[in-house]
Image (cartoon, rainbow over all chains, first blue to last red; front, side, top):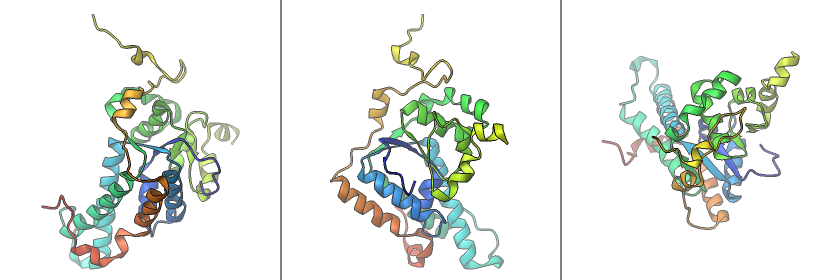
Length: 184
Length: 67
């Protein structure tokens, strides 16, 4: 991803990559934020869907809860998503994502258009339902690949789903390739 | 009898039975950003350089949807 010379004309966004780009403390922040900036400049079509938005919402509240728990310390008891501080933090992350997406050549895809087909990736590559949806969207949309920090997409034949991932995740992702597993 | 549009037969291949999205489906979800790509990329870089979880002052802000 960092040394990608030929940027994709279209790419599917995976939730983890966007969270990494948005959150400075994330270990992949530098690579993911720089890549996102480059593909906005290159007018790459950024495909995302309803499931991506739901997952981002969930991650925002998880991170907000974790942060409030860290600040208040263990004796404060359970921190819930209804906590005003959690809602404020989650809302800030989501606001920043929306500020990014309105500046990008983004394409929102409605999932019902493709849901029935994605079982192919669950059956052939052993992906979870959520990952199969994102892999299916690469094929369905004609995107060049998926921008991700999730190495499990490596289990899909790369002629179908090319991965744009931080350099430090490349080896782990490649080890999941069907050919790599066959020779192990 | 159910009419099936031509688009519904457009699959990636016989081996990979994933229906391709139509141009109309893609265009329907397309965002049309304002400004030059260079300006937008610069703004995106600025947005991404901030961090939600390291600035305690943001705790006082309430998002638009907060009740």
